[in-house]
Amino acid sequence: MMKLTQLVLASHNAGKLKELQAMLGDSVQLRSIGEFSQVEPEETGLSFVENAILKARNAARISGLPALADDSGLAVDFLGGAPGIYSARYADGKGDAANNAKLLDALKDVPDAERGAQFVCVLALVRHADDPLPILCEGLWHGRILHAASGEHGFGYDPLFWVPERNVSSAELSPADKNQISHRARAMDLLRQRLSLK
Ligand SMILES: O=P(O)(O)OP(=O)(O)OP(=O)(O)OC[C@H]1O[C@@H](n2cnc3c(O)ncnc32)[C@H](O)[C@@H]1O
Ligand SMILES: [Mg+2]
Image 1 (cartoon, rainbow, N blue to C red):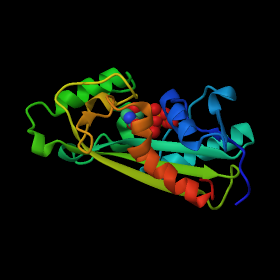
Image 2: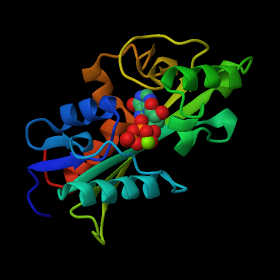
Image 3: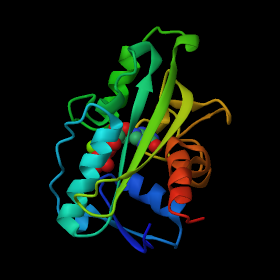
């Protein structure tokens, strides 16, 4: 693998950029695809892997730089793994607050024992738009869906995600703590190994 000093992050989500740059440290500079284009590609894949590759190729094509994409979401056991790859679009694109309200409603009266869920993160790295061998790394984070939102940190579904190993919601973890144990942290650990960073 060539030495990477600059990567474009194929994401319009500021929360992801912050977390991924913090995890990478100074070794690699992450530039946002927002510097190059405001148009978001349609996420037409049927899996996190397909959507991550699609976003990475699109960003590499637009920027001319090697590209990293993060496709992630929340899979809720009681909902058969939904919202899954549709997590960002769960409430028809109305945003995080609407997504969280819809999830709480879908789990109304569901007891704690049946509220298990996993955050999923797939990172895809392509060296150029037509790269025939994207690097793929995944991470899972097991927890439970709370009955009400709690905490101010993070983004997305963090206020509803109970982290059993810490007894807090993931929005109550400090950013540094979340970045040690999250689905994204696990995927990034693998990516760093693949790239011989560390
Ligand atoms: O596609 P890009 O531009 O990267 O940004 P996005 O926000 O649309 O990202 P996804 O398509 O991967 O959808 C991810 C969804 O899962 C949520 N999500 C992912 N990681 C999360 C985390 O660490 N904490 C809370 N919610 C998370 C996030 O809020 C979105 O609703
Ligand atoms: Mg998206």
